[in-house]
Length: 397
Image 1 (cartoon, helix red, strand yellow):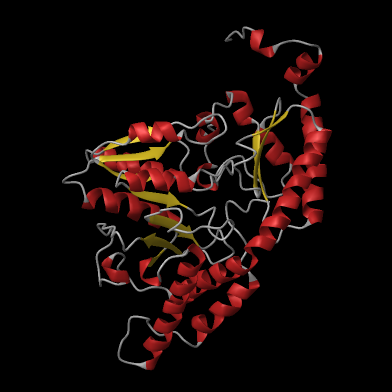
Image 2 (spheres, helix red, strand yellow):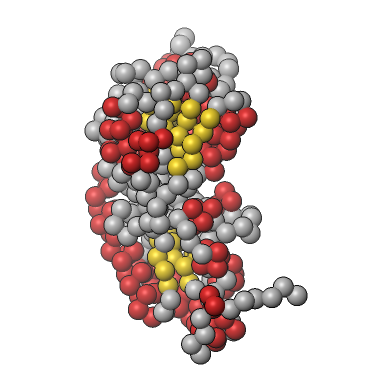
């Protein structure tokens, strides 16, 4: 139930990869023999499959090690290439850590970064975006679907604003590609990050889409043999690229079916929990939302205690990348969630292979443990007695 962190490998993807792990082991960049040609044609077919999923030209797809590398390449690469004329970047406060950290890195290099706030529903205010654009803005980077609360930003509108002001638009679509329809031309996206292991593909591979017309230029992060059009040197791992391509093709075929099925299961989970437990808040906009990512706050229950109690179910209280810290999620803080509710939030993920039985089991355990933990909580007892917790002045001992 934690498919935002990673997904299992689809058996069809594994089948497509196996020959390239064993028999066809040539270097795809070897030009002088059949081993290289076989690998190269497999790599190019995978590039076509990735491009087809997002409506791009295969020449606009560059293989990377994952969405973190793609985000770094997009943000640092574009900023550094255009730095003589443009020194300003715009992003949001609820981006993935690798986007925020890349921006912090650029600030240390002398760039100016605007971190747009989001409204209480997790969406950005388009008017604020327009007002933030400056003559020397080179890039706007806004994720499509948030990895913690599942909120879906108005990507087409953002693309329209950016293209009308001649500013490049990058979106981290790791949680969206293969799950909701994405078209880089309709949405006017100039750069897009894709991850393999979020779409039932292998770990360690991803891609970045870089628009050719109008051309987006960027400075590569990695120097070497000039593979991947010089944007990303290093031998492309054929089996992983083939796996990413197969994962994209399967997602394209099954997107509609998966979406409907996941919506039904998500609905089942939320309805059952909400009817059985009072004081549960769903974080993020319920309309503009990807149904497979559900973030609920259980008032008067410590999220970590609930996770420990539900240890036979894989859940999380934030993103896997920051789950080692006990700080409440910065995404929930950005949407104005109270500190105590932010600490009591749990993220439920529903994916292609989640079953009805798993959802029902999770719901049943969740209800049981929330009730048990609340019975142990003095705060819950006070609320039941009609005490307004907001009015209490707590003293420090």
